[in-house]
Amino acid sequence: MRRQSPADLQWSDVTPKSFFLNRRALIAGAAGMAIAVPAAAKLDYVTSPLSTDEKPNSLEDITSYNNFYEFGTGKGDPSAYAPALTTDPWSVKVDGLVGRPGSYDLADLLSGIPLEERIYRFRCVEAWAMVVPWIGLPLGKMLEKFGVQPGAKYVAFETLVRPDEMRGQKSPILDWPYREGLRLDEAMHPLTILATGLYGEDLPNQNGAPLRLVVPWKYGFKSIKSIVRITLSDSQPETTWNMLQPSEYGFYANVNPEVDHPRWSQATERHIGAGLFAGREPTRMFNGYADQVAGLYSGQDLARDF
Image (tube, rainbow, N blue to C red; front, side, top):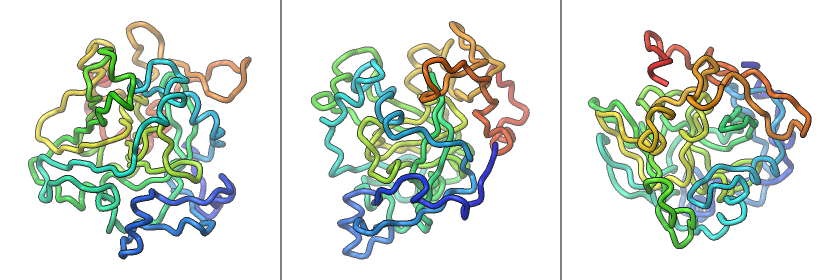
């Protein structure tokens, strides 16, 4: 992965828009919430040293071509129908093998975590590739805040179920709620973040507002959107696509050009925004993050643990 020094790229190089993490955190800031960021000021954010130096996709690319089956199966359905989703107020249940379980308002969930607001400019892959300038924080920092108990080995996530606003949930195409999970060491890796925004604004609804997971070395379906529950457990959790078709969608879902999907090759990928006549590109092992994450899978058969 090509890297760039944090000093090389300021927020104004990515977008001129001001950013604040979320409306609830901003309001809470008046009461002393550490996470709050002034909305009126233009802020200079530095790029995480984990970021790629590849050019980000346009905001239009990122927000108009999405997979979010809760709003429909078409790539344009999320941008068309996700505005109906109410994201404020928002709470997240934290339970399982944690020392401080409970239901937390989003601002409370994120407050008190020492961090610099950063641009995490990650390559992301679903059926296509794009580079997204996320705003977020390491998932591991949040998990530490709630006290990971010694027996915990996995982290499970669930998406909101609200069919009146998420029209795709009226269809039985998937078993709702959408579920995903990570091994604990994957969840604690610094590349794994909880995103609250992109391109200088709150996270758009079609991209998983107000809180989504980003795991850049895995296929996009692992990066669950609109999270309402986080559970630590001692056993591997059920995950939506693996439940639907285990022969095609494994628990790990690591980007691996050497392991084909049963119905298509994964050796090449298409980069959104490259133009109508651009060819496909070779898929990179672990989406280009092999130097950082390959050690997590030492000794595993990645054709079996796909």
